[in-house]
Image (cartoon, rainbow, N blue to C red; front, side, top):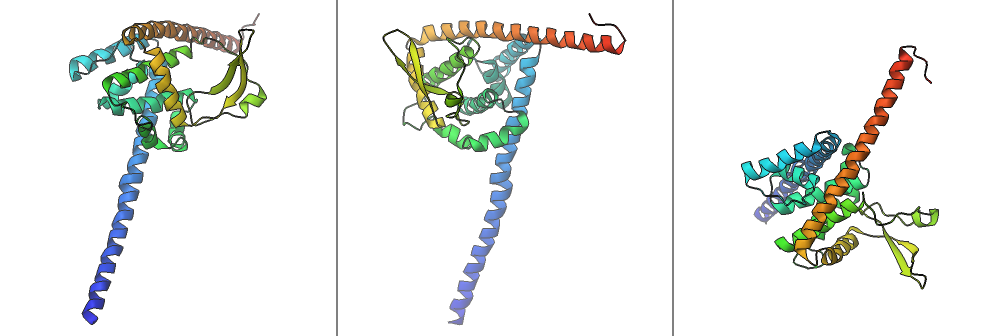
Length: 272
């Protein structure tokens, strides 16, 4: 009987030791690893912002794509976004991982998240694991190269359309009440009446799962002809880049004017 008690206590002691080991693993590897990854993603976002602000951005991205191909054997499409190319260069990982990281960075940028705030943003949207799971949430074969390309092309199309929208309108206070901070895009319920115009009836609260499904369905329309989609999105990207570049030039001009005014004031020059 006493031997049985000793054995039982020993087993309980082993369970206690494993509990301590599990707590150490969770703290140092699971939690610590996740936080370390979030920190890396924050640094990636910071670098993406610096690349986008660079005057010679086009040359820098061209160099990144060239080195991906020549040094690592990783080919990029003509319509590959600058962010996707840069993240692929940084990770040099498989396409799926690079794609997930790119989605996180693009979502953070679309929501105006600063690099320091990306950890909270990822947790708020369900974590990287949830974003990764969205690709197979509906059971469709999104892991195939063609399906992945269609999704990537559609996301690139939407990114370009943010600079070249089909239409714009001012949101009312009522519509703003139904916004969502967990998705990259906003969704509205519309109807088309006899006057031929689209009428917005409500804003539609959305989840990341809903958004992934919406993009998948949109990809079937955008990429109904994959060859034309590649050419069309590449052309749209060039136009969007021109808009971005012109905006940067205008912003730099305004900044330079402000700096000149400050310098003139400091030198005692009268401003007209």
